[in-house]
Length: 503
Image (cartoon, rainbow, N blue to C red):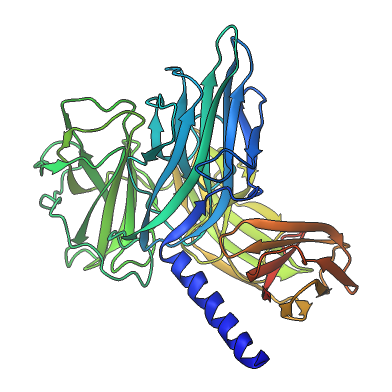
């Protein structure tokens, strides 16, 4: 009988886990305090959890004190998103009075929320006048660029009056999987959208403007993605290519419009980094003969965009002069868990310096340091940099050389492999009350930090300063039944993770 119940439990966890991933990523009904985090955008007022009086259960609220006082605060959690999908959001809210100075924002970003313009907004509205519970859907969907952990946040903003405090309450904060994104931004995506026919013919002109035939599309909200595939000619073997885009709006009712241009390998195998900026200050990409790419324009706006848009893209040959820095060599090696990088230049002209970038997948690079350049030189100049926090396994490195006028170019990519004898042991894997764990590592660090989080990415508990080689016990008796993960990470960037089940 116990074996049958255990099998049923595993099936239950499996069903809950995968139905959540493919449906509601977050559905916070506030039946209990969810343990989300908060950060101030303006003012210093906390969100408060109310155990009763919700919709119909508990809720979370933000109260601006007697004023005049402006309060603007983020309330957020972490989520794991898939670049092959798109995501929608909504929430329920009510106000204690009809104050037209209130604002509600729902956004997703890759960093902890900060300020009042953080992340990509799925909703930004001042139409928050209902004094009874009402649903407020997002006005646009979110398209993640890579797989990984993101921050999902709600920002409430209140301007209190001169006499009484004013309160906004929230419930049923929801982030849902809205289906295939169709934009082919990552390897393995199915049901990629067909070419939207936005490209005009190839042009040998060096100018990035003109010659673009508009294709009418209807706006779908504050965030739109226009994508189209394009194939390089059979010759030459390589070519520096720029992509001009034209976006117009009729009527022009979208405020603060910005548009970004990205190039992806086709079929959907992640973004291709720009090779640098041309003589006109525009980004360009170095592509090979017969190479097919998918070019996407993402339009973002903070205003209400109900207009008709006419997007167009046209590839052109970029006007690029020889690089101001000539590399003689770029190499590196692993030592004591760190990456030692060395490079030499043969000549330099107006060289501001080098941004050192690293990546775990050779697709997404991030800046990890900067080394100032010589400026101008006609002889050999040697440089070096040490990455003290290199991850275990293979790490990819490149240099982003920056001129004094802001133009940039990239070096070749090199790889360094780190092999560290490290592990995280947990006993048992099926836990009722006490979880025992042991960090075994030859990493040159004294302590590790431990985090336990559920399958939605919400951190359930944490413990700092775990010493390697010693068993530690964590009380998990108060956890809800389900699938959990435990992650250990050191100050040197070493991180590993195991999963376990609470019953």
